[in-house]
Image 1 (tube, rainbow, N blue to C red):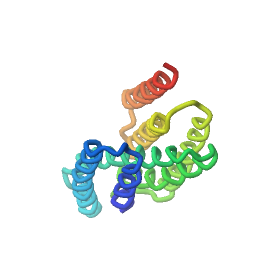
Image 2: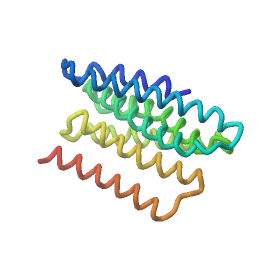
Image 3: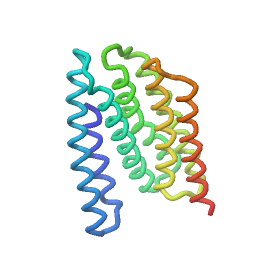
Length: 194
């Protein structure tokens, strides 16, 4: 139940970084309501799928993956919006990414999960995410662009690890994720150095 706790917290923290504008805040709150409903349905599907095989698991994986990425963007954007030192940002982002990786990797292998593998992958990937955040701290990026760049790393690595744990990691899948990562990286550089 990591995401039902982190998703509302991420929206609540990110809410205060928005401009004081009724339009943007009402859109965020509307999306929060829809996202929370979808998240609770997803967690219900995971609870049933832990005991038996059901057809809705694929849809739950897609919705859970999307909400995990959105949660990461909001939380990382909030941390980077505080404008702390580069090492504090790196540590905080690593701490944020760790439970999100655990949740994402566990949901990929609900019935046949190996906890030690999931914990190890989550720890290593979150530390690398923290190091990337520290590196980005030296670049002249806005907090939102930096958050999207770190979340791009999160998207690529979580997606690849999920496919690997589900034993569906093919060369075409790797190429698709790598291309998304390259596009996010180039877009962040283009926005930063235009």
